[in-house]
Amino acid sequence: MTPVLRVRNLVRHYGANAVLRGVDLDVAEHEVVVLIGASGSGKSTLLRCVNLLEEVDDGQVFLDGVDVSDPRADADAARRRMGIVFQAYNLFPHMTVLDNVTLAPRVVHGVDPAVARERARELLDRVGLADRTGAYPDQLSGGQQQRVAIVRALAHEPRLLLLDEITSALDPELVGEVLTLVRDLAAQGRTILMATHEMGFAKQVADRVCFLADGVLLESGPPEQVLGAPEHPRTQAFLRRIIAAGRL
Amino acid sequence: MSSGHHQPSALQQERLAYRRSRARRSTVVAFLSTVVFAVAAWLAVTSSPGWPRVRDSFFDVDAALRALPAVLDGLWLNLRVLVVCEVLILALGLGLAALRSLRGPVWFPLRALATGYVDLFRGLPLIICLFLVGFGLPGLRLTGVPTDPVVLGCVALVLVYSAYVSEVLRAGIESVHPSQRAAARSLGLTHAQAMRIVILPQAVRRVLPPLLNDFVALQKDCGLISVLGAVDAVRAAQIESAKLYDFTPYVLAGLLFVAMAVPSARLADWASARAARRRGGAS
Image 1 (cartoon, rainbow over the protein chains, first blue to last red):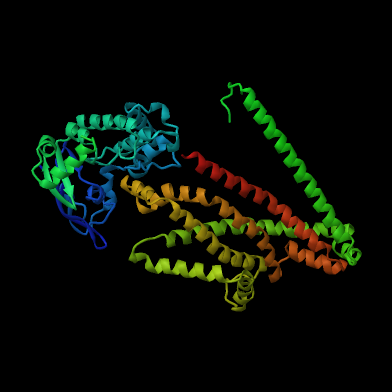
Image 2: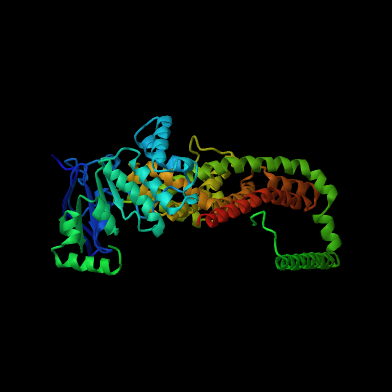
């Protein structure tokens, strides 16, 4: 079966600085793949390249077998089939929660506004935000904003959900509510590629954990193997630092 | 300010009383110093040797009343010019700002054109632009080129002011964080959709105070179309002044322009205050 996402030899430079140096990665349908690695290892850049927010400098990104990194491919059409959630939520501050969530269905997918609103209310209800549909983003807590951002990314039923360190900007007591939501999504069989520093969480939900260092995928496998008995010395060193910081 | 039900302690009540007494004292001091300054200024002007002559030729109530209908007629023209020009300026300014915000080498010619336009008309003194457009353009004797001084004056105003307004709007567009664009594009919105629905609404809100400032400036610069012969408030004042052999109509026209600008200035203040409050509130 063709994987939902296939990344081949992905390269991305910022000037002389090579952030991704030939990454290969597959994400199969219903699979949850977690990217771990130090800050600056290229996790976010990989996600942004997959979402075509960054141009790739070499290599290919296939979505359902189609090379979307080809400049002849329709990038907007490809993005419509993915959803991405950012570290800083990036909700639109001048729109209410409901408008944020229904924007893409209404404007991009041509869904009838009433239908889009109905569906958005359903989704927001499921994440416990039914009473905040009329609020503006700055009236919500960080955890609530991030849950809205996840709902916004889900509103157009993406084939692939990309989560870029979505709990890094949250206060510790708000991390739980967001991770619970992601756990539910994983249980529903969503295809997810996420970057995170929450190792405990990765252990629970990941089908596969990938360790990135200096723009290269050094190690990949089931969580108990990569997080429990890592083979590569760099992975071992990284995990030792995480454990020393009390994060695993 | 308060939670409503909290009963301030004796200490806090004493503090509040002290603050109130300080506020009262400040108000009294400010009021008295203003009165003293106004009286001193008034005395300095009225005791000057030339004051009787100046009063008769600049502040003649009778002349003002006789000139009023003509000047008001002219002001009505200024007002119409203002409204039409402002609409055109906003449209053209927005177009220029959008062109200058385009990225990628494909758009270089359009970007360069917009940049050249802005450089030219932001640097060109309005009065020279008025002369060039007002006298040069009809001088070409091309068919279809308007000869009405009002229309030509509007063209010159739009050319110069759209360059200013486009820069204000561009600053607003660039002040919207790139992550907003990324979020919009990630949802599948095209560049144009992201601009229209996500970037511009935020940009315009941020630059509303400077935009209103330009609007106030335009309001009085509308009076400059009189140099092309359009009978606006300034020109009407000039005609009345020649008829009455008195400068009072100019003072009258000036006061009317000020009166017209005050509501816009208060609107600009209100918009700035609201923008500041919103920024403060978005913690």
